[in-house]
Length: 115
Image (tube, rainbow, N blue to C red):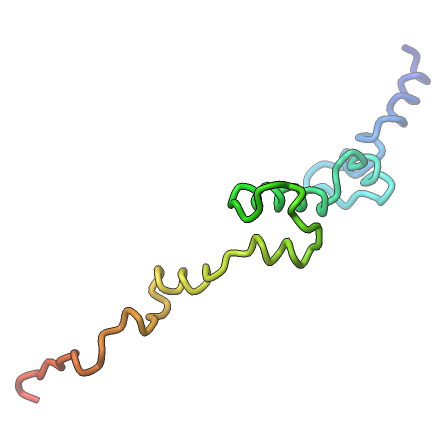
């Protein structure tokens, strides 16, 4: 390979013509280079929809994929974890719901001697 051919090969190689060749940390890529590198990736919405549908089917919310309404708000409501925040509060002791608190009448105060 001649020197001119080698130069042409380097010019066509993305690594030598983008910030990938600049070393660490890598600077931002130009929009054209990003599109070229990420052209075959699905959109986030496609990834999210497939994941949400699988979760809905796994949880048995619907029996058939045809029964899933493909509306973003409906899907969010179907897969949300109802009550998880309240359960976390209880498990991690950040609050005590009334259902686990003893009645105030049942609590005896200890009297400290000498006071």
